[in-house]
Length: 330
View (tube, rainbow, N blue to C red):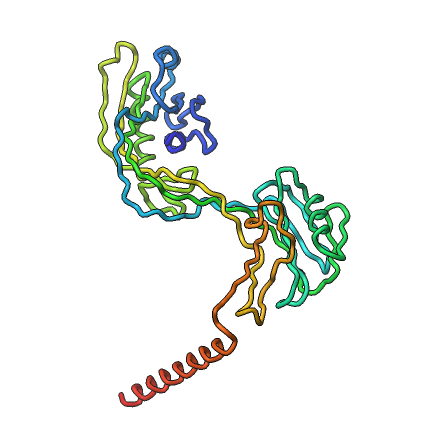
């Protein structure tokens, strides 16, 4: 909410809470911060003509709103920092290595190709990735960040990053007071008017009006207006105050990093393989994360698949004939 208030005042999207800025339309110096101001800091700001906007969670202003079933949801998409390109049988790694990424290479016939993967650590670079994959691929060589494969048949290389996911374990509503501590009535009207408009006119990523705003874990909070009030009683201390009160509903979440799949492959009843089957050895205790190809064991035999396809084709033919007959009768 600090970011929304700061944006409403034109303080920029990278505003750091508590920093001094200027509300350009009115020329009022202001700062936005969390919590309740200390008396000394507030007096200094008021004496200097600075308006303060505090985002204050009301003590004992929380109530339980849990009502949703447990369900994993995707968080903000993470883009790999390591990049890879392919030319013939030459694979070149660039960018920056870091943990939470998996690099993979496959080559050979489409149904029987070799696929290999390597899970990066915090200390890996494009050079060490090429070296690690070369150690896993018989007949390959590497020089710096370039990996040369023993074949140029259907070569593919890719890098995926672990993706954040969150599970809502609880939901609550918190009363939040947005309070303007201003040195004069004009500053109060200008600053808190802009803040009020900013929270009332929020837009989603598609530019549509919304009462929700994103949280760092990928979930959303729901903002509900309660009321507003002004207080001129402290004006002898050069303080003009306005409160805008909201109820904010938000989830408590469990976060998890989920690995992505590099290549897909499997077989039907041990026969007729398809896709890419990883042949790399398990990497330490991270087998689940390093091996991104999946062996799919199906209960359908080749004969059953053929029979099922025949039944589908026969059904489609019958339905088409019935449709044509009905059309002709009309």
